[in-house]
Image 1 (cartoon, rainbow, N blue to C red):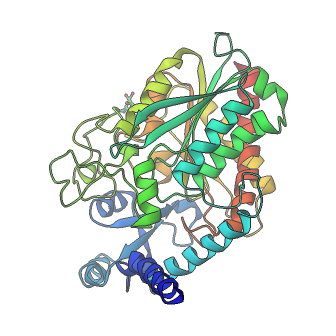
Image 2 (image 1 turned 120 degrees about the vertical axis):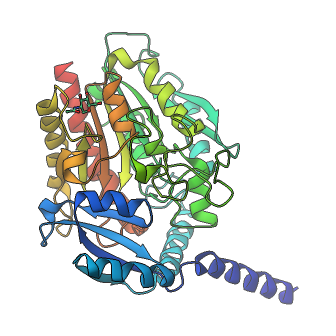
Length: 422
Ligand SMILES: *[C@@H]1O[C@H](CO)[C@@H](O)[C@H](O)[C@H]1NC(C)=O
């Protein structure tokens, strides 16, 4: 009996090690580059995030790039030739991932002793779905769970509609928020769930509940999300295998799969790129869930925010060419408003938020949800990049509470703007 337990333990430990083995010897480099180079690198390498040029000491965009030992051989000479300054930030990614996993496990076992839903741990997709269903049961007059569609691998993509008037009062503005379109950005679903909590459980500002209808999609991409727990912590895309090249490189970047200037960027055309746009616009069930939720009430949707991690930014249209929509000044104003509300509560070590046009702050993109939602007529649409501090996507659970609470302040500021200006 004890021998069996020991065997099972050894097996569990070796499985856990195996999960991160593929990143043994992978290193992270900060590389100073131009906007065009950022686009090019994304076609070939894993770019974890990019720091706006306005915020970096080099005066250039600084991309955090993951290089395998083989990629290092190929790309460091490339950076040298082009005078792209780089610094090594992480020596062995596998070690960092093992540390993170241990922290995540510890937070889970601490939280499992309490019966309340915790905002200090990373929940699995099924737990999040169960939580949404439990809220609908507890608050039947406020919360409706929509079983929107199945993911490629058959997981139920759920979202909630929050309304005091069953979405029947057509004078109310609608706010739509989504999270975890990118699998590895674990800190984003807790932010979406905390927004729901502030609206219907704690009702911290009853006006926001009473006079606005909300649609909140906590996990857009459950297949990728689960895969990032079980197999590959750095996974970003969906897990679909329906396109040419998907045997070798499954998955599509949900945030390049929307029908806005889709197919116009060569870096997004490669199925192996982290920013692969898919075989056609809306090829992914996951993208279609967002599309259909948005189109239902598009005439009265005032604000759309897609929550991502990381980099402390509010980015607005047009990402495809860097020009501004006709309400560019308002987009900037409301973005700054939300950013200021967050910055007031931020940790000292956090970078202040940057608010700006996506193509200017970082690089040109095609097929993003932010641009598509603006193009179909929602006046205020943003990509929100949460803080990663020194951890990137691997935000330790003890920071989740900080991030959910400060981000709620930003969302509330945006919602209040909508309330008084709709
Ligand atoms: C930039 O893209 C937007 C959105 O598609 C479009 O409306 C605008 O005309 C474009 N501007 C230029 C100068 O190409």
